[in-house]
Image (cartoon, rainbow, N blue to C red; front, side):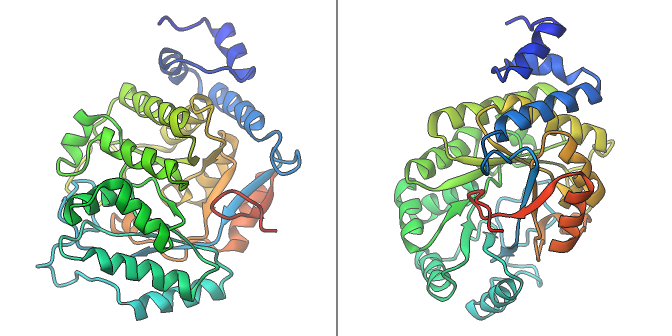
Length: 363
């Protein structure tokens, strides 16, 4: 398909029409300020009817906590500085008592969700996970469990020798509330084989999302870029996310971030810069016409760039994130509390509001 000329493509975007992958590749070459303006226009269209018609002015965030229940993993991704093997002295599996302490602290801070992920532990039993979910649901019914990425679910299905649908269904019945989009990286198998050869392929990642959405679980979609992929690979990733959303409709938000190379096996010649991050986020907002919410990634970019990203199509500032272990293991550490997030949102000329996982306002 041949891309449209500049004026025609601009008009198409401003009208809210769907763009092609060729259009996206053309847009990628446009000046960043033009891309930002078009992304903001698409954000305004996406949020025009949200929150009683005030969606254009509102930027949301959530108070939650990342909990990595184990750091033991046997897929050895080259981009990850967090995983350990059972031979490493600092490997762990959290006890329920340790988990309760974290959840008590979250509750005291007004938190409403945990993002719970771990490695591919080869020995934890199916019942351990069911007991974990039931324990949290019984003791902390006000906390949504946003947990277990698609690679984990495929690992569970293989390890427990159960159909994927049955695993997800049993986890939901035990208390799982939604699924994060971790492990997406780039949904191009040539890329995945280079950076995480033992991890699931693109179709398997999408299969988890299809099944979860059919079972009534919502999820987020993600992209980690700035390693070995091409621009065309990034657009192909966005296309596969958009096609999946057309099929199952369960993605609540899209989040992209740049690869953090410190302390990882995977090395790059040059770390991906801020302008490239903003360009990709803006392009994602324009391309993903069926995903309402785009989250800025201050965790990897820093608070100031997270604020600037609100001018590049984002309408959500992510999470207070009381705890974060994976990205910080790679050497990138930023922390913000709720008051700082609200100050940054107001500084961008927007109105801050807390939300839950389903983007319903809590204040």
